[in-house]
Length: 463
Ligand code: PFF
Image 1 (cartoon, rainbow, N blue to C red):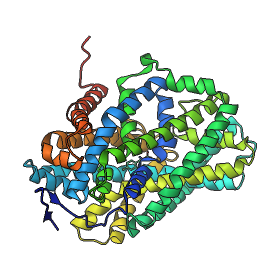
Image 2: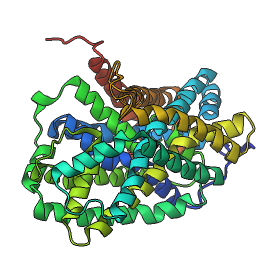
Image 3: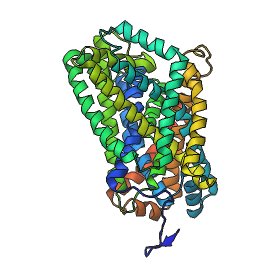
C-alpha cells in the first residue's frame, strides 16, 4: 500500500478509489457544502440573530477560519488516504505525536450521524413540498395560509416520518453504491440548475419584494444586537455550511488525486457556497418584509416565503416544484457527505461491505431522526437546555462539535504536522502556504476558542 517516493514522503492510495478529475472533486465537495444549510438554515438563523451583524461575523468566519480549516481537512485526508479515524491515528503517529488524535476522527463520525438525523427530517419536508407544489396546494396563498399549511404539515408526525424514511432510503442507496457513481452526475447538474433558478427568483424578489428592506436587514450591521451567543451561531453556521469540522471533507480529500491544488479547489468551493447562501438571503428577506412575515420565524422560513412568492408568479406551481426538487437534490448530495466518514470507517475498521455499512449507519440515523420528527409535534413541549430535541442536537453539533472539531484539525495541521508534510501537500512553501499556515496556527484556533468560551460564559468581560 505504501510506496516511498523519491522525495521521501509516503504516497498512499485510498481503498475506496479516487475522483476521476479535479472537477469531480470540486463538484463533490461543493455538493456536500451546498445544501439545506445555505437555503433553509442560513436565512432563518440570520433572521433570528438580527441580520447584518450576524452576516458580517459569518463572512469573517468563512474567510478567516473556514477556508484554512477546509484546506487543512483536505490535506490531512489526502496525506492519510483512509477514513478520518484511521487517518488521524496514522498521521498522529507518523508526525511523532499520538494515536489519540483518532478520537477527533471519531467525534466527526458521531457529529455526522447526529447532523444527518435532523437534516434528513428537513430534507423530508422538502420532498413533501415537491408534492404539495405539484398538486397546486399553494395556489392563491397568503402569508397566513402558508404558515398554517407548514404548521399543519410538520404537526403530523406520520407524514413527516414517512418523508424522513424515504429520504434516508435514497441516501443509503447512493452511499452503498460508492462515492463517484451517481454523485458526480447529480452534482454536475444540480449546482448550476439551483444557481440558475435562484437567479430567476432573485429577479422576482427585486421586482416584487421589499428589496431595499431586505438588503438593509442583511447588510446593515447593528452590533448592539450581536451577543456572543449570536457570534457562536454565526461561527457554527460557517462550519455547518462548509461541511467542515467533522471529517466529511477529510474523507473526500482521501480520494483526491495527488496533483490537484488544494487551495484552488477550496477557494472554488467556498465562493460557490457563500454565494448561494447570500443569494438565498437576498431572495427570502425582501419577500419576508413584503408579506409582513417575521424574519425570526424559525425553521419554517423558507417553506413559507418561497411557496408564497412562487404562488404569485406566472407558472408558479412549476417553479415551486422545480425549486423544491433542486433543494431536495442539494440536501441529498450533502447527506451523502454526512454519512461518508461513518461508512468509510465501518468499511475499513470492521471489514464490512459499503452496502452493509450504509444500511447500519443509515438505520441508526433514521432512528435518531425520530427525535427531530417529534420535536415539531408530539414532543414540541418537551424542552431542556436549548429547547426541543431538535434544538439540542442542532446546537450540540453546529455550535459545539463542529467548531471544536475544526479547532483540533487546525491545531493538528498547524502545530502537530511538520512543515515539510503540509508544504508538500499544499504545493510548496510560497505565499499562499505562509498565509494558510498563519491562519491555521493562530487566527483559526484563537478565534474559535475565543468565540466559543465567550458564548458559553467561560471568559469574563474585561471591562
Ligand atoms: N454543508 C451542508 C449544508 O450546508 O447543507 C451540511 C453538511 C453536509 C454539513 C455535510 C456537514 C457535512 F459533512
